[in-house]
Length: 184
Image (cartoon, rainbow, N blue to C red; front, side):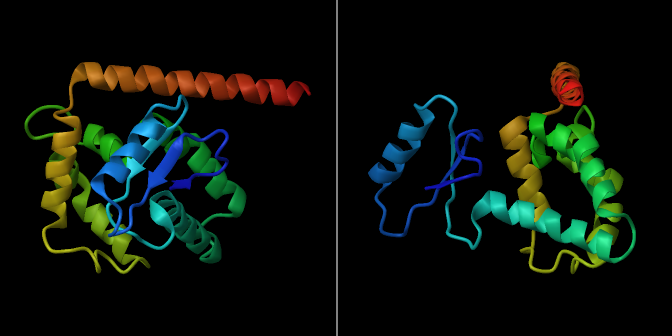
């Protein structure tokens, strides 16, 4: 297992079985952590350097460093950009759920709709210093669309309203905490 820092606050526990780990042992570990309030285990099906959450964080950090090194923005602006957008958004929903919502409602919405609407921009950004979609297996878009649809279904007006309410609440709590810190 691999906790995410700070482990006494953040819920994530990455369960990474070896090829020799039995299905019963995996089930025990998953059930154990699911049964502990404040913990959220995920099953990592295959070992990978840095685990899952660190790989995602390091990919974002790499791009942040590139933006600073290229003179696009400074360190403070990168932090502010994340604190005022993705940090709040991803506190509510992860990237797949968020981008699924961003694709819009209806049969032409969701992740498939997102790729149709902004797929070209995604490709351009990926090509700009990230090596494009190199290293992604053939058919990755279809796999992502299928798994996103299975995980979250179609985008509904009520789901978007819930997202907005929760996002506003996160911003409200953050504002309260910042106001307390200014007074101290």
